Length: 212
Length: 212
Image 1 (cartoon, each protein chain N blue to C red):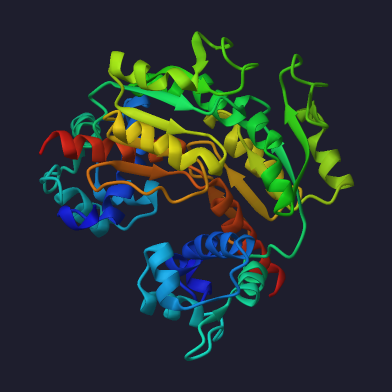
Image 2: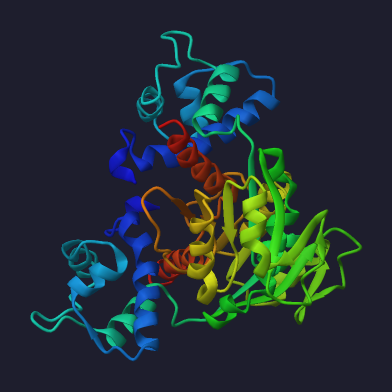
């Protein structure tokens, strides 16, 4: 995917952090900020910040800095946060339920429509007001609902099968929590959350300290 | 932290992926693998794989490739997976419970000893056999138990306070799920899981496709 884009994935991955800090500044009523002040907040250098933001058009004004509200709104648009997305989750275990339960995603424009599971004891349960449906019905469900994002919180053995169903049903974005690399066509966006990998990185660094 | 290390963080972040593929190869009974075969599996180039692994000593043999069992064990050691870690979680909401419930972490050597919360309705509950304790008792608890890793699954408003308690109690590793950048001394390892950021990256790419 990277090769199609002018902006590097490294820069793109920094955008949510900028957006997060700008949200906090807005909440505090701060209206303008210099790249140096943004640097102090984010830990990125001022010149990196200017470079990063220049990728998307010059937001700042020499001698003034950035208008917080404008920059927040523009970064939000770049991240697609001015739109609404519908998502479904396959895998109604603890992680699937935690995601369904977290209202923050909905506040950010990502609405979880339904959970799916194959376990008869789960089917019919409600997480908040979100029902757990039989995974056997998922293709019909997607055909009859506008679903942009498919979330996978199944064990790794089922993840590729579910990804295949998502892809064949026309879903363009997959948020994958299963510890597998999904095989998918180039026009499908897959974003992985690797909890195991993250924990292993933590233990790597703990281990480095121990060995010192 | 990066500047103390000879090996770049980018390489280190690839290690869990190598380890994951090697685990699968082992499970399939495959005993040796060439860097080219590893390349086909992981999507990294063969020369990148050789370079990455050379950072930690030459594991491969020219004309033979890698012994899967040896490489898996050595990477496991580098990641600190040959050791056992005790962890506690503050924030017994859905995400905290999901982490406590996931047996995979324990299988990898990370044992969750307890959850902590300030909500009286949560205190005393059990997640698997893991009890939810009153967060007011956490300092005593850490003083009386061997705890290497402190996990934070609180709302963002409490995250820094909890991090401070962890740090003052001598915990060296923090696994942070709250969407804040924790302030911490250099000798503390903080690994963040940014669920919001990950979702925003997904929507960024979805939005790129829409605009084409």
